[in-house]
Image (cartoon, rainbow, N blue to C red; front, side, top):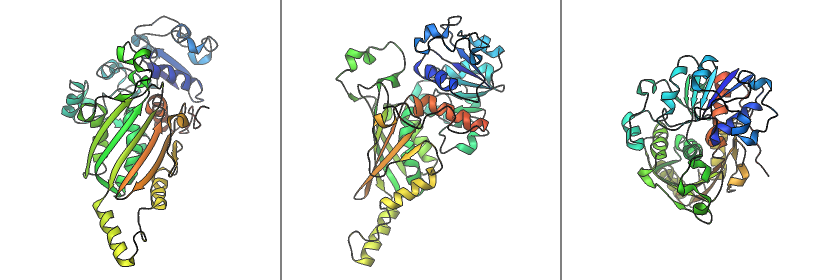
Length: 367
């Protein structure tokens, strides 16, 4: 199989190249960069070294980065686009209808063009293709992904937020208001010149940014939650911390009215304050097992609280929880560059082409 990577010089593009080198089903890698076309990949990404440049997987390009036009000539089976929002769909134009396109930008994630415009300042660049695109949250849309030719890779914050929430919402255990506070490493801002991302600005410095409706990922989160339940209102606040990689999300959710009523009836019937509780740890564990028991990259932790170090370098999402009265506290952790970006893109590719879902991906984290 031939895979073209658009935006090879960015963090997610560089990580994609490494994953594809370890992927046993990938025969050719076509590294694409408009700004570095003609340069050796090992010179642009010095972490690669030179060992693989003359290998079989870079045979078509001889280890050089190629232009978009040249990549089209190579007729890749799949294109993974690690490009900026509002530009990605436009630059992928030559591949639609010819290659499977996995897009890491937001261009195909939000189905309502007016909602997209409110978040990104412009209408979606390819409104005509929105209905064809499948939201690539692997553990939830696996059947649709298998048939899709355009896959919208989810954002990192939505991935960490949605995975612990969706099973409980689907089972009617939680409902109403949901409040998520999430912390991300600096690499989530991309590989670009930005004063706010400089070492001196971020070292010994952490804080919230773009809270509530001002954050672009909120509409994406809200849209996916509403597919499961209309009884949901989301407040989302991201934070930036002096970390290179990783996201942790802490979500507070109220138990649904039906669950609260059921528990009240049980208490009245049995005359004990806690007996008959339908939402104990065993019940929550059973729900997650029902939805994620066969998912290779979901790690259920029970009352343990996951941390970024646990999942660093892996394609895992670790999930924990704690009940507090009529509320649930949900904890999740991912590597924002892997499960939040490149790793989920490869996982989507594996599902789409019928490969082993974990091919080219790591379950274990770094030491």
